Structures are given as C-alpha cells and as structure tokens.
Length: 278
Image 1: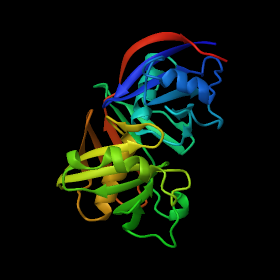
Image 2: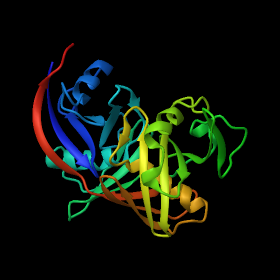
Image 3: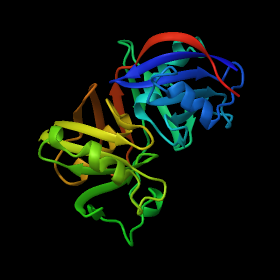
Image 4: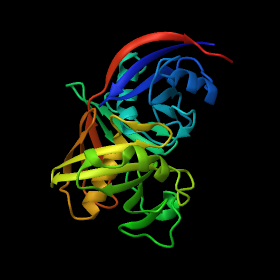
C-alpha cells in the first residue's frame, strides 16, 4: 500500500500525519513500525491518523500510534500538529475544532500567529481512572522501581502519567529508570514517566520518558500532567512555562474539575509517500 504523509513537529516531538479522512486508511502495528523506523522508514515518535468522526457533532477523529505500533489515548503535541494539518490541507476552515480521541474529546484552536491552543480536558486522579493500582487516591505515591524508592504524583490526562520532582532534570535517570517505571506492575496500561525541576512558580524544566516511544524532545500531555502535579503540591501558579528539550510550551490550569489548556508551536517539515508492506 502506498501512503501519502506529512512529517510534522511540535517542540521536537515529531509525527507522521496521514489523511484517513478523504479516504479510509488501515494501519496495522507493522505498518506503523515501518513508518516510525528512523533508519528504514520516515521516522517519528508517533503516527497520527486523521479520520471521520464517529459522533455526529464532532469535526474529526484522530488516532495516535506510538513508534512501537501500539495505539494510545492522548498526545498534546500531536493534537496541535493535527489541528494545523487539517487546516493546511483544506479539510476544514474552522479555527476551533471538536475532535474525538481514544482518551476523550479535545478542542484545539488555531491562532492567527500560527500557534495552536488545545483544551485538553480535566485531569483525572482516581487510581481506577489512570489506571493505577492503589487502595485510594493520594497526593504522592511511594513506588519501588527495582529497588529504587520513588515518589510520584499519578494522574490521567486521557493517558497515564507518573510525575517526579527532581533537583536537576539534566541529571535525572530518565533513560535508565524511565523504561522500568513505564512497565511497573502497578500501571496495567503502562505509564509516561515525567521528571520535573521547579525553577520558580511560573517556570519548570521537564523531561519525559514516553510510553512506547522512549524519551522524546517534547511531550504535551506530559507538560500538562507536570503542571497539574506541581499545582496540587502547591509549587506552581495557574499558568506555567514548561521548558522541554525541544522547546517551550505554556500550560494553564485553574484547579480541580477544570480543563487544562496547552499552547505551543506546530509546523510541517516535509511531505512524501512511502510504500508499506501488507
């Protein structure tokens, strides 16, 4: 099967975006891995598939596949790239969209300066909603990661996150501890592992080991989760600048029960076609 694609990025989190709205596209795990392979394919952290909505009052549905081929619920940087893609391709003329994802509905809005703001929905904290194995909700949970004692805030942004506060994000054990925390037995669907350094009440630095993708240069839902965790622990103000390896994002959260707003850049890098094996 020959597929047309657009390579896009948001704060260095890179995507292969495919139009399955104009004509149906079937992506198996194997096809996703072909596209995501950085040596023999296009190369990306995630593959995004634009589709027609299943509900009558939504504008689009979009599906998110990690580089390992697994489908996941949510991606903040991907949501911004998605919104730019459907506008750039003429699939819609709307500035504000209602979009179905596996993790629930989101509402991206394209601004006049090219940035995209996404209403990511309200975070969820009950362990069963993450999902996370715990007797009751807590502000911080103690985890044993192969002998390492870890304290993390656990929440869902439509996908699961475990956020640690660290003194120096550059020295954080992202590459060594991240993959072990991702597959910790208390997370039935695995987890995204965030490492947050608080600079002041309006600025943090963040690195994220993403479930199914490894460490990426930027993680939008991870940025949201980190700010929510810091707000709940009394460390951060309502609007926070998040410095990631690939650039900066702005996250705003008014408090429990309210949606999280994510703002940042999204751009196309190049377009092409690729022959995929059946």
